[in-house]
Image 1 (cartoon, rainbow, N blue to C red):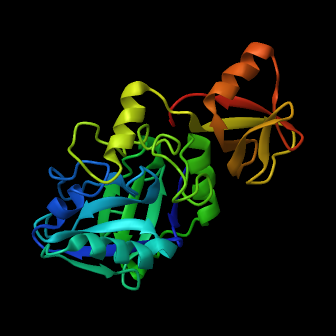
Image 2: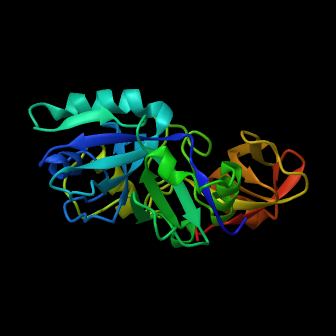
Length: 280
């Protein structure tokens, strides 16, 4: 579906309040936040010290401005652990961190304008322009968003934008594996944050070994989680699937080997045509 408005039921909100909120987060995450303005958002991640992706989220200022704090649009099931993790990093920072998911919901609008009378927070999805606008508001203010979420997921998949928990595993995936550098989720010029040395080394040495890439199936679409094989060799797995299109985490060197040898990539009984390019 090329247009719609969906409640994203699997998303939740963490509210961080205090004048030093952006400074606090800026020291922890992969993206730069210090120049963030109301009506904007940054896509960012919190990593382990080894550079593995633990949490990803959107950061947007409160309506009162960034001096008051910000909201994190994140995976709802991760919120208890994320709040705990942020509080461990807080030390003496004068910020308050809380789960605001009972009072605030998340929606996505694409291909159509946001209603003129919408009264919540709206920001352009920073990962890819065609993803449209994300909204944060009390559930009653999002009552117009009646498109089933599955259509948003199909739209996301068709654009080649991965989703944590389906296309990559939290705690076991590097930033480049999950395409965060392609999705405006990393500032390679900012200072230190947990895992930054690993991210910088992979980026500047161009040594990423895997990527989540858009694929097209020639044959029955496989189920998410299906292995992708080059002959008898497993080179990755299928994530999101939307009709004849899907996403797959693939070994980049094996893709080149398959091309050179003329060997098809197979998942289930379907051959794969791979698009080795950033999401559109």
